[in-house]
Amino acid sequence: MGKQGGDSTSLINSQGLRLDGRRFDELRPVSIEVGVLKNADGSAYIQFGKNKIMAAVYGPKEVHPKHSALADRSLLRCRYHMSPFSTEERKNPAPSRREIEISKVIREALEPALILEDYPRTAIDVFVEVLQSDGGSRCAGINAASVALADAGINMRDLVCACAAGKIAGQIVLDIDDTEDKEGQADLPIAIMPTSNRVTLFQLDGQLSNEEFSKAFNLALEGCKSLYQMQREALIRKYFGKDGNEAGEQ
View 1 (cartoon, helix red, strand yellow):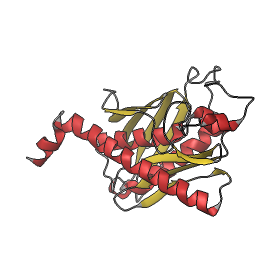
View 2 (cartoon, helix red, strand yellow):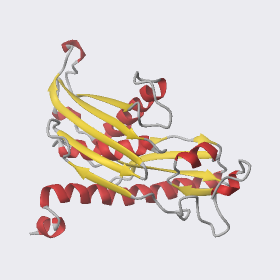
View 3 (cartoon, helix red, strand yellow):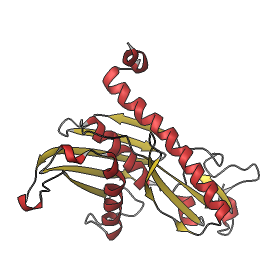
């Protein structure tokens, strides 16, 4: 259904459904594949709605230049990059300020989950390449990067799962896409370590009342928990096959 004069109320129809047919508390379709790059130590590919993102991990490895090495832990380096063909208009391949910021956000979201002190004087490089973007790519990238780190065998306290909630047409909804992000009133991406319920990423773009914030945060939290199950299942499929649950229990 087309927009009516740019009125954001057209983002939700009279049946309470969004433009893509989802209800307020539904995630976009998600699929995760582990170990897709043979030359990386760990890798994952995620389709999160129309987002298509590849994550690759290299390390632990020797640090260059050597003066950057940390005596007591590994140096985690993250690079988030959008391919020139990932958006509607061709993007300049040079890193933008937004990509540099999101690279930092992803590193800070992943770092608490990694036992970096097990790898002193080394570096772990995480590359997140966005092949196709449709809103929420930082959360999708964190989900893929976390799985890729696990695939690389890096010692971890927990996986990190990320999801956003937002406000469109005056309503709080889960997992906003690009159109909803551009025309909505707020966006709240979070990342958590689900076993300990520790928040590792918290951002808010827009304004929410106390009640709206509480609803959005809890909705994003439930989205994270659903994605955590998908991450675990993707890892189980690679290492135990299709009947991973049974194989893991035997």
